[in-house]
Image 1 (cartoon, one colour):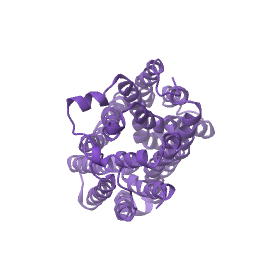
Image 2 (image 1 turned 90 degrees about the vertical axis):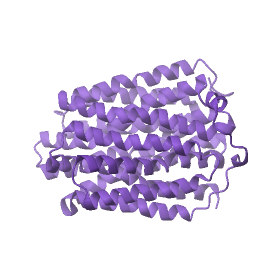
Image 3 (image 1 turned 30 degrees about the vertical axis):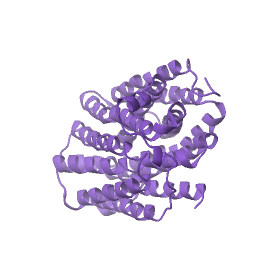
Length: 399
């Protein structure tokens, strides 16, 4: 199986498995009404998905340089699918939902970073940005697709049906991954034991600056992705739509806003190969931060204006995602790339435990405008870190 076939096969697997990521957000307005959950409780549930993800990544990242990452992808997709099906079938209430969403996060963690590790070996540096952009795009489109499914079918099959279908697709992903022939990693034989010397190589100044900017990016991205569907349900309600219509159109619009990122990640990765990682990342960061500062205050604007703003927001907020992944492979020693990718994901996703949670508390205490604005203000740390990084050589070709 050649490089392109492996890439696209992994993209299909990730697309199917990532249905689990936002399937709770897709049905959140209905569950909140049925179970009388507050926005803060919903934020906690979302946050614990990321707790599971971060804890699992710490485990996976220590092993993916030694063992074939393919098997982590198979196991992760299976675990994410089973936990979702159990949620749909038997769960009612805050605490069990919290536990099962955390298990789903543990499963999803076995897909993204192990896949990045495979691509790092498969593609040379000059083609890696575009390849990672395509791979990240499958994550974006897959995770957004669950909102689309919810918008289309929740009125007919209920929230349980939406959760069941999206979780079953993750099981299919697990089976498909078994049949993708991934070559043995080039550096498996020389992978390093984790010790203080190795850890210092992963946390060099350049790595820290790349990862701190990635954390700022992730803070904004995952708060927006988790809450854009409920925000749009609210927006359509403000404009006179009945509840089920608001849920349908809100989720479908939210899905398109997230899924446009599938194009954006490819464009961002391609542009970064051509014009430089720091310049391109900063360009998209400035646009997305501006949108975050504005959008929550604009629930009164006509639909056409809101749609234009939303699609600019959805494109810019994720276009820089593959840039950080590629950048950390460029600044890291070859022997510790798997560990470096894992460390980046841990640092980046640790903040995503808190950003949806903070968003929920701000929404409950204030309003949508304050919630989005605070998320945007914190994200300003990302371009600051990239500015500091630009003072060092990111590679022999770029400063």
